[in-house]
Image (cartoon, rainbow, N blue to C red; front, side, top):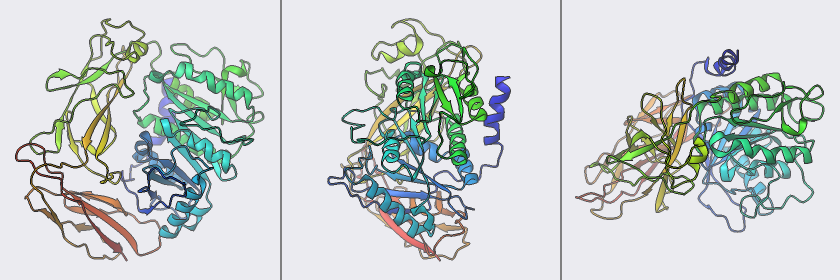
Length: 533
């Protein structure tokens, strides 16, 4: 029965036509940071509004850390946001990672909302309800926004982050005073491979200490700390739908309770409305309604008592060893002759490594123990960074709007995954590669990028023409505007109906050069801007 419902809940999120174009952000503005010492003075705020949206009903706001961009640009997730008339704002790099409202965080956010309202024509952005989302080190800022502006905050979503009232000097400073986030719905997601079965203890403690906190937790079996999944994005979309329907709630009078997830254990009591729950409330999380409960049960009941498997990557025929670091696997950047492609092969591990204690914890096996695996090969999946997957083993550098050309290096974070089979549960392993933003040795090169004239609304595409003085191929990306790059064409997409014209489109031309002989330096990127009138 649970498998039928799993399709029912997640199936309706996949049953529509996927029309959202991944990566479209129609507008962007520079962030005026009110912090006394802003860490990222080059931050930009990017805005996406659904193509048919007449009135924005809520805004999902994220500061860039890692998983946020994968969730926000997920096509199925965006389609769901379009149905709800939810706009998205992504700030990269982050303007105030922890949202220190004693140091200008709210003034900064309020300012960029006003700027985007003016730029886009959607004036309601200045006043619309906010849903804040963050991942890992950036996952506490939603709670700080809610504490400072409860009347403006509709819900908080913490992906693999801390609980609302957790405090530490680096990520969660003790600045709330007497503030609280009573009645503001909060969702915490946590993967099995990041200790979801024990992480819930602190959340339950906070629920007991703050009975008016509507706190939900989604445990994610066979998932880790870094890798987004489409299923998790779909669940978050459903949560946002419920938050918009119910608004602020009193969890002592409304909603349902469900016992927390326990690894390889089935629930010991039946979920029920808060006033009918027969289990121990101190061991239960709160949820909006029956549908949310059933979606959570369907998600959390997967892979019960299945065998673990481990994955990694090999480079030049040798498995990259584990390290006792946050991201564990760190292959070197070894580009091919073109300077921008490199290869890694996803592989299974046949023994439990000892360099990082995590793998023994994930598998419940001692270091050195043999471990089996399912059939078929693992696959690579991007998490964040300036690369794209060309095929099953090949990455290609593709700079994007998140690039800071003033940085010396850029992180590429990806995962190796396997979906499992009837015997083995899914596996996921994060990995990190560091690449230079610019090649600084060799022959200098320059880009000539042909001017882009203004166009009339309704234009389908614009041709892009740029050449390198060294004869190397030039690539492009859209910094902002209702468009995406397809080869040497800029494809224009739907423009929301309340848009203020003219609409600005900014395109960047780049050429990375190469660090093998003959070495060629990275060209200075060239920007062209035009307007849709």
